[in-house]
Image 1 (cartoon, rainbow over the protein chains, first blue to last red):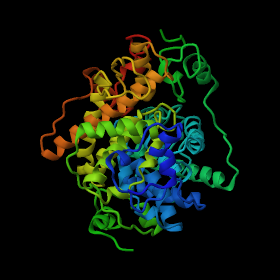
Image 2 (image 1 turned 120 degrees about the vertical axis):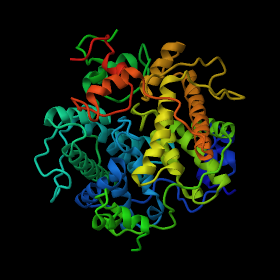
Image 3 (image 1 turned 180 degrees about the horizontal axis):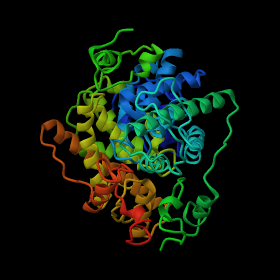
Image 4 (image 1 turned 30 degrees about the vertical axis):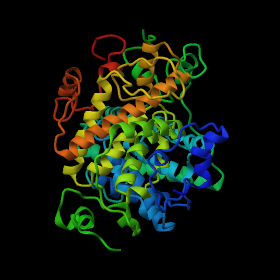
Length: 265
Length: 265
């Protein structure tokens, strides 16, 4: 087994060097081979947000939300950069469908976008992880705070009528869906909701590409952050606080105050 | 561009054939190449749950929770099967750290396990998606309802004392962490909590391998399901119901009744 310098520093060698990373990769534990896989981050080339949004909208109707976003960005890069993007099994991201395997947990558009962002901007080392997470968190807060979807296709695939916009206030699939149902009056399994999610896929992929284009042009800056209300919760409950009994960079109020404004018991 | 029969049926050809899948893949939209990537599901060989758990525990301390689970299973398969598992950039799954990029949304162990399950048991077609989702949902409900972690390493890496078990009642990172903090008395960023999450990674990967071994031996059956309380909520709010204003296969009560037992307004 050949270890690259990165693997030596991050893995087995890290132990000998007393580095911060104390575990070894499963690959080293199993003595498994690694073939033709460059280390992250992979090379990025500027993408056309509109073209990616269109591809994502199409792909949604084939493989659902998470696949729609992830494959539109990765296949866009496969077309512009070629390998190693051509060897990614994008169908794997179908699993993020409906908030992961239909459970309505993390919105599939954000799931797919997170993996796409990390592929081009992330990596094993703590510093680069932080840079990628910064982009991802900006995206998540944009999603929570923006009336979506923004994208309108030239020809609608599932519903031709007006698709109203709604703010989710959450990164969870079912909350996002319910708030849209409340705003629109449509049912959660209606063709109109399906159309809305297709346009959401296009909107999130477009915004993700804009963030990545800015990041690689050196002009990325955080535009969205967690609400002041949630930061206030974190000041007593998160890292370094008096209670320090949770963690999280999600909106708190929608779940924890959903029956009123009184502090949960 | 060469299209396989699968792509023809599922993609462009699907339109002509009037199949259920109406979108085309982003790869077809961009005319991007696909090289050396077999279609899902990839071949599975029986893994040793204990060996995978050990590798996952090690890998957690290198690349966090999601990477821990995903890489332990995929690198286990890389060692037993070889290609195509050897070409998967497992570092990409670092992004699931701390509930996705540190946001404390979907627990990283479940994120990593979902992708690993789908890689060997899933695919683009609706029928096989459903089979994989069935395994994933069984895993999620096991996670919600079981006192975890189960795994105990031969030598603890971060905390030598007792690690108590707790039930999360949720698939969310921050809920799982908080319920463990309540049960244990430890803070959410303590070395003991870090140790607990490492053992959770090992426990989830072990259970996932047991599920997959059973599935490919033909002996898988659903052992865990959504609680009766949540099913009762779904009967008025989910697909085909009177209100049909949400979707989801998550526990409802922990968020929606967190200030009492009265129905949310």
